[in-house]
Image (cartoon, rainbow, N blue to C red):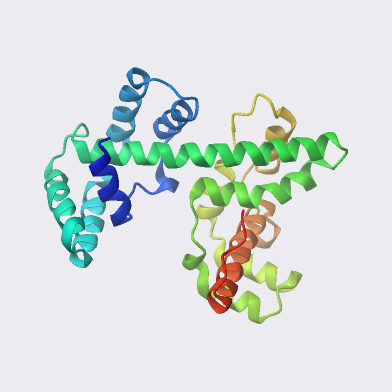
Length: 251
């Protein structure tokens, strides 16, 4: 991906949604994280583009058009140069490949953070923590990162949770208000088959936690409860930052 195209996409804030990325993007991300050479990355980049360009081309074009409507100067010129590629159905066109590259790099960063969390979970299990209890604590941040969930998508429900006192009962109601079966299945699937040769107990504990179909009651779905509470914590932290004008905490 050329530097100019990368800058245009970064300034526009346009990228393939992480939550829809398939195994092709995951393979690309692993190769990027491993420092693979370009001859290895090029076919993986194309495979990722082939998997997503046809379905997401129009959505990416609409996002770029919205960015263009707000841009001026060099940013507008850059978007004007990129937008014609939206009409090209070939997944080998520069925009399609650029989006695939950005998706792979974003996911590579996620894999680094997931690995760090798996290592922490492995250490806790080695130290004697109950594996499923420890996995429940780790699951929320990992699912949130892998699926790129946005607290704003659950803003009304999180606001109601905060207003109700953030206790166990309000957490159950938050899970029920947000946890439809599709998103809960999606959350569980993200924990299956995490590659972690150095953290086998951590990966096994997360896979066991996410095994089977989601419980009928979202409040009894440990994976989703952990995930939505993680998002609630993010929303609360962001609200405090906005009120106080301070930098958000790391993590």
